[in-house]
Length: 68
Image 1 (cartoon, rainbow, N blue to C red):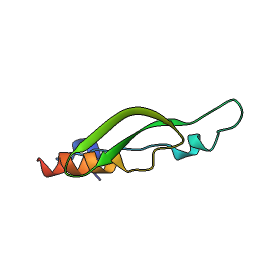
Image 2 (tube, rainbow, N blue to C red):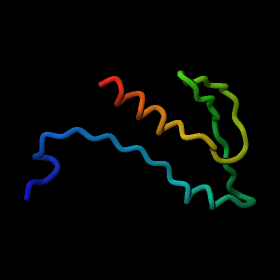
Image 3 (tube, rainbow, N blue to C red):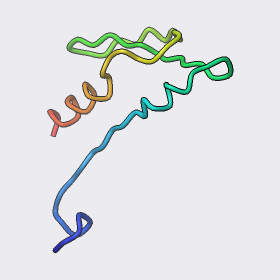
Image 4 (spheres, rainbow, N blue to C red):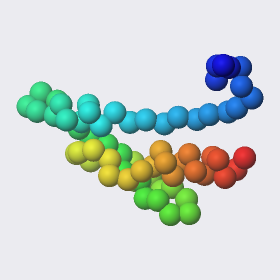
């Protein structure tokens, strides 16, 4: 059986560990940059409390794959 390293394939992986956000308490706080998704990505450059609610990594990955 061939390993992935020997195959003629390309892969991109994006992950965000939401488990870390569950550690929030008196000592740890979650902050994020929200973006607006449309045909383009619009960055507000404002830090907000909490965990990001959009799927910007998924959007950016689709944009990248559509450009191939």
